[in-house]
Image (cartoon, rainbow, N blue to C red; front, side, top):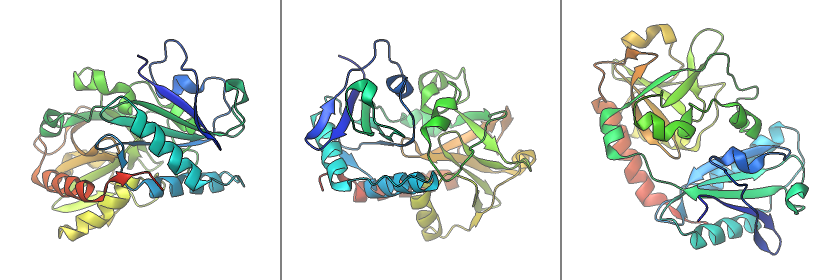
Length: 294
């Protein structure tokens, strides 16, 4: 069985598309197509999603930022997502939704909307208990930080994000790469938002970053825990002053970072603030996941 399923969203329903031989990552499915905007998320309990409509709203905002007048038929797309997630053979999945800049005629469809699935195993508890090491992405930046474009995803190094999950879990590569602004402040990861804790206050960049859906949830959760929160990017030169750090994203929840570019964060172990935020986030997920059925 292929480790991917690939569909075009059509009026008659999702239509299966061929998976290229040797495909090992999502981007391999889109070779030769005119890339546009995309979103990536995961399922829970097989076919349930978290804040799916907010993911679709972000996709629509990304299209608007690119000047498109294309309109998503949300009901059609939700039906397709529900159908393919429910029928998929895996317990949980990573899901990629693309809206291309032009129809995928090379695949025999006039649709611009594609759905790709692959089996997903959440990061193991041991990874949250130990934390991860990250590094900086030299020379990489989002041209349009608020737009989630497939072009940027294709440019990400193979050592970043979930593209490196297996090797990173083995400890031979950084789990994620961080983007800096021109002032040397840490903005975000290539596929995550970045958080830091210093003297009991939680920091995350307030502008020039992708509006992550998990980030949006955490911006609600963190103040509800009584934790001070500042929308302010921390300086890379100040890593030594941080007590804790973490990455957030749909596939990672709130994952502690214990080393940045070889420099320990705090005492080099996940801290109590990160553990508290992760527990609150997991409780939020359990209460809010639901199927895509419109």
